[in-house]
Length: 330
Image (tube, rainbow, N blue to C red; front, side):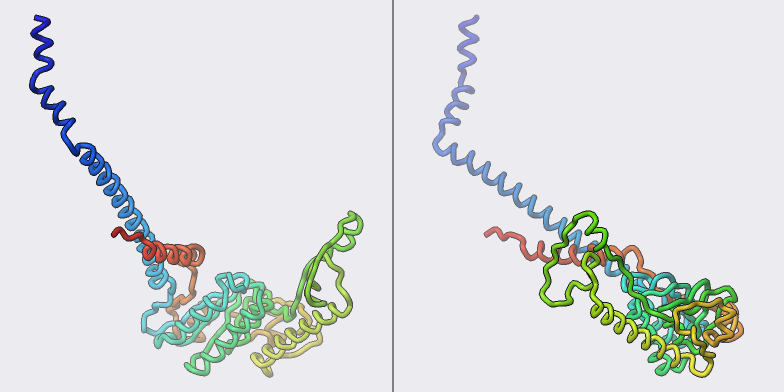
């Protein structure tokens, strides 16, 4: 029986398998199968990369669409209304009170035929004279072009650069407890030279140009440098004063302290001619503009816009490069 079992194990089936394995060219067949499998894997990986990168490009496109569709809140109806633009917080290039956002909102408000007047709702301690100057200039240009009145309504504060903007309005309305004024310019910083001497720290600053490092807090400031900085501040201060006088005209009751950087309550500001009268937003819309419906044109950077500013350029550039740089199998 055992001999018969052994004979069966070496049966024709096993012999056929052995002969097939020893058939000529079997190594080539196996190698071809491995090569095709590797090639298919590479193609699958390449397809996934393309899909992934196109996905990023689609995300970027959606973000752009969101900004285009939601970035402006000034899609107002054409019925009679009071157009509102808020100026809140610090006036700076990277804030919600930047010239870019504020000017864009004001243009939308002026261009809407249903807007009977534009109201600037201000609550700001001030900021950049450059940003304020851009906004002031554009408001004056748009007033002349569209022949629409502009009113400033002050909430808690309208100081420094915020007041620079407010004087472009035809009238300024305040609360009796508002803070108004601060018509001045400052440049602040620190000096650590005395402390460094006490600690035995040596400052090693190399510059090309005699005055290149004169704002460096670890270097002493010469009298010549101080005079230069003061002359620059005085010039900007004069520009501020000229804008206030142009905007307020004969309504100003100028005093020795008016342009000294002091600020006043809303009630005092009315007495000094820095503001026209007491009133809030609803009062101005109802009694002055005669259009109680208020439409907000203020532009607020939404989440999509923030993402685009932070990551959008990098994502877009990377996606385009990825699509262009796909390897070609020939």
